[in-house]
Amino acid sequence: MNNLIESINQAVGEALQRVEAAENAADLEQIRIDYLGRNGLFPELSRQMSSVAPEERKETGRAFNTGRGSIQQALDDAGKKLGSDRTKAPKGIDVTLPGRCPRVGHRHPISQMAEECVAVFGRLGFTPMNGPELEDIYHNFDALNTPADHPSRDAQDTFYLPDGRILRSQTSPVQIRVMETHQPPVRIVAPGRVFRRDTPDATHGMNFHQIEGLYVDRNVSLADLKSVLQYFARELFGKDVKIRLRPHFFPFTEPSVEYDFSCVVCGGKGCPVCKNSGWIEIAGAGMVDPAVFRKVGYDPEKWSGYAFGLGIERLAMLRNHIPDLRLLYDNDVRFLEQF
Ligand code: DAH
Image 1 (cartoon, rainbow, N blue to C red):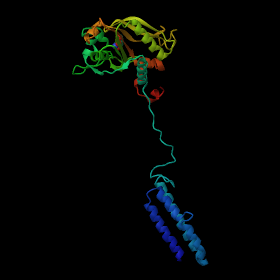
Image 2 (cartoon, rainbow, N blue to C red; image 1 turned 120 degrees about the vertical axis):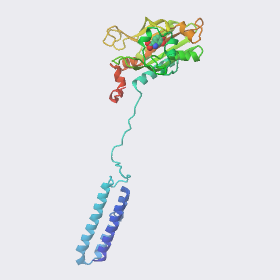
Image 3 (cartoon, helix red, strand yellow; image 1 turned 45 degrees about the vertical axis):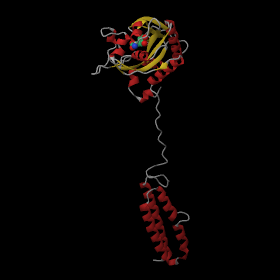
Image 4 (tube, protein in one colour; image 1 turned 180 degrees about the vertical axis):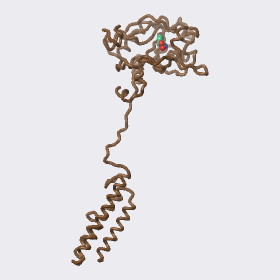
């Protein structure tokens, strides 16, 4: 065995040891450069071949080729094991794969509609307020002129807690809380979640959302209410939407009305959405009952006001042509991401 073969074998031994100890693709690349690279050890050894005696050349050449081959093989194997071949990436990361795109979410259609309502009323000077979802019976009913034996409590049966509190059945108690803590003039809207003991179907749920409005000042009239609701309808559904008020009953307003939008689907001609009437019921409203003012210590001789309550799901469904309320609550991203 000549010196050159010895050097080759030694180099191969060293290289294989280094491959064994390599921790990442960068280590392997360095080994490749050191031994097989253009200025590496093996090209250098190959240049020494000319000094080998002719009868030893065959054997030396074989040692050279097998040595180089086994280093290359060891590098390839180790590269595969580390998960990336020849790249400088840290262990286990394949930088050639496309990146993972984080999923960007957006507001739920109910939240979008609530925010839009708050924005529209905000332009008319209404301040957003909040009240508790866990309410007491006094604020949810009694203070709103709905005593325990009043039949309208039935329609708003809700969930009762052992401590006597309830899940509010309407956002109207926020009116009371605001008037208890603020002196007139008052001009607020209160969006929020409400609860009822209802069997869920396409238009009812055990929990849904309302936005309440309250305006108290001197000499407020039903005409003021109508103009605000008209503005609201146009902002939401375009300038051609008409509104109409129908007489109704609510314990906390007198007179009380229900108000309708001309059908936003057929424009008032009649279609399945408006049940061929041309109108869609949107919510309740009215002039604040003097009995309510007395409960909060406002002088009904001095102050007058109007209140209204809208269903947010209803508006979101009309706006987005959603046929079934439950779709909004299924949490199916394929449905929600359309809005
Ligand atoms: N709270 C009523 C309901 O849930 C809606 C309502 C009607 C609110 C008349 C009002 C109002 O503020 O004046 O059915």
